Length: 333
Ligand SMILES: Cc1cc2nc3c(=O)[nH]c(=O)nc-3n(C[C@H](O)[C@H](O)[C@H](O)COP(=O)(O)O)c2cc1C
Image 1 (cartoon, rainbow, N blue to C red):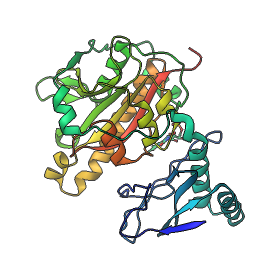
Image 2: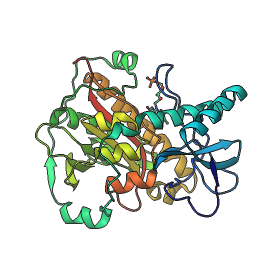
Image 3: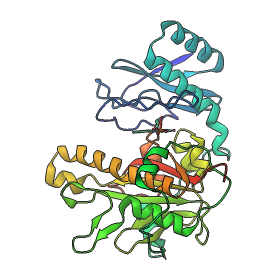
């Protein structure tokens, strides 16, 4: 087993994402895989914990014990031994890492395709080349069949979807719930925003929506319309960016929230970063409840490679991805 210590450079094949400002633990229910906890590194190497990725025939995983972070490339046998040791030690964070590793190993082929294609998309160039193509969306409906209380009671993370497309009406409703304008004078939206500064941008990776070509779109709340960013399917690459979580490749649509932190920190300083994190929670919860009310399923995904998602979705340089939300019909439908 070769051991790669985290130093000034990323080891080949492993790209490190910036740290999270606070320790978070992404836990799935008993039946599902446990997702990697993310946390800060005292070394200042800004290293994610518990991240795994296939590198050739091996599995590379970033491990953490407290603040000491290292990256190891494990082959199958060595990984097994390591896992057995973790179980004996029984340290919860190591078990979480094992589960993350297992998740990556299990789901690595889930994204389909072979090697990741080189990403030819640069947000600026591609975006401006076709960014003027727009698709209008149906007006959002303000009446539904499920009460708010029922939606709250029924909301559950859904990671398996029926093999079916969404309608444009459904997509319209989801986007409106995320950041739709609900007040015309100041352009106030469905989700609260500190100082009404609206740092969030909503992207949508469309795979199968009736009447819409596959591609990446940016939601324009003022006009309630979609602007084409990339005219091609990105779901396999996006799935890989999200540590091979199969929900992303299976869903007919994946919403992505990004933030331009500067819009809020300009006014609120460092505290603005906290506000932005709160805001994406508000907006994502709106989408969760809207999806439930429409009889659809979704899950919030926070485990992904920031830079890769940014490139795959053709985001602008100042936009940082925060959440992915695959959405689809429930398997029974
Ligand atoms: C910040 C955050 C990040 C999350 N990231 C992921 C993720 O990457 N993948 C995933 O499958 N679930 C993710 N989840 C969903 C949780 O696993 C889920 O909410 C939890 O298991 C509770 O289940 P419930 O949503 O059905 O109530 C995340 C949840 C939160 C709040």
